[in-house]
Image 1 (tube, rainbow, N blue to C red):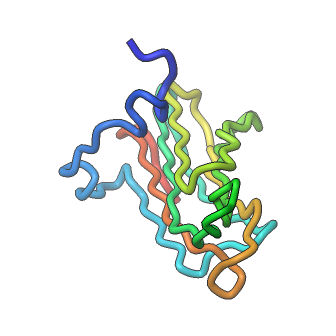
Image 2: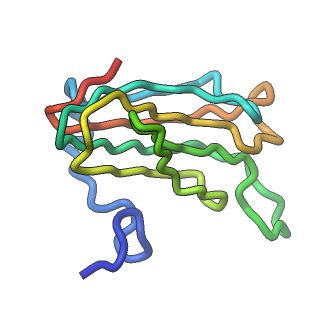
Length: 144
């Protein structure tokens, strides 16, 4: 029995179902943002969830290399959060990794916002950090 939900130190982000991951249907949205975000910028993506639905959002990016003697190896820091219809914010506040995931289940109906923000971007392509975002919901959700 695992003491915490994914991601955790026991299983990471979980086992990958390659068939599902490569068959993007209407309940999956993939964002490949090659322009990227600068410090203080954010991108917001909306999803409508019906009663009892679920939402999983995973943010990944290729970080700039740190110096060999750096105490902290994450150079550019993007953050991921989900804002519910009631204004409740769910985030991991992870300032160590270049991958973040928020997974929510049995949600109340409403409009949710998945937000990616530039927390700290000292190095990047034209001062910005490109990123990938994969959002998936069960069959009772809809992206726009």
